[in-house]
Structures are given as C-alpha cells and as structure tokens.
Length: 189
Image 1 (cartoon, rainbow, N blue to C red):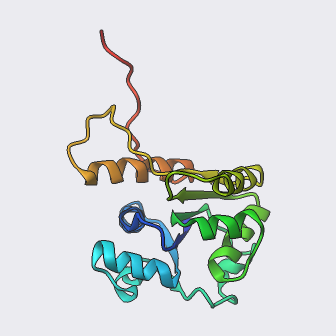
Image 2: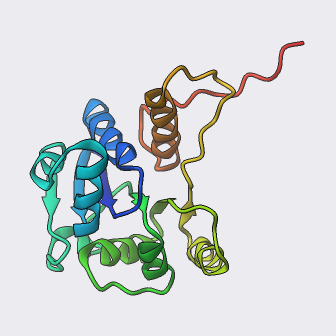
C-alpha cells in the first residue's frame, strides 16, 4: 500500500521545506495531500516565486483550506503522518487548543485523535512564552515540534543541503520508508 502524507503549508518563513517535502515525497513514491493557507501562498510566492497552482501541481492531491469535507478531515482516511511545514505560531496555537476551524487544523486534530504522527516545523524566533506553552501543549497531545534548526556536523556546502537534511529527518520521524538523514558518526580524534 502506498504511504500517504498530509502536508500543510502556512504563512511562516520556510517554504523551501514544504517544496522539498513534496518533491522528496514524489521520489519516495508517497501519495501527498496538500493544504495551503492563504498566508502560506503569499509566503511561498515571496520566498520561492511560486503561486498556489504551482505548489498544488507538486502534490498528488490538493485541497482548499475551507474544504472541511475533504477526505483528510476524517480519521477513516488512513495516513502515515501529517507535517506542517512551515508551521506559523497562529497554526501552532490552533493545533494546541483544538481549533479545527479550517481543513488544515482539522486534519491536524484528526491526526492527533487517531494517534498518528503530527510534525510541526514551527517557525518563529525568539520564542515568547505563549509560543513555548503552545509547543508544550501540542507535544503533550502527541505532536512533535521540530523547529528546522540546521545541523552543521555533516559540513553542508549550501542552503539546499541544510533544507534537505531537515526534510530527511522529518520524513524519518514521519515513518516514511526510504528517508535518509545523515547519521552522526562521532568525533574522530
């Protein structure tokens, strides 16, 4: 059976992560289900020069945030995991407090209630107390907060390498077969 991954894109910086997740998902044979908020479209256009149509073309299936009747709004629609990349603080707050007021936050709520993996690539810095408390609340409900902080131990040569490594780690956390994050090999004296 093909693995299904739900991907949400919100208005925080980091649209490169979502685009790479979609493309890597295709390489791995995933069925991707995309939900992009209006702010996510604005941000992706600003950072990547892509509009909604171009982003949706990268996914297997795409849904409007107002399409509450979409298949991803139901727990009976089995998925491997859901990733919100990037995850704005507004979306984090909605997830942390169970506000399923659009398809993206409803799909996240369904992911949590079905005890599936929900990975939130939260984007904001520095964190204020509300951000931290919302991350704690989401984590207590079973979400994984994964700020896309770059790792330098593998000596990346480009931003693309940094993005790719974070994406591979997220895919591994999501339980996706074929994800290949670089493992720490230890310090050689």
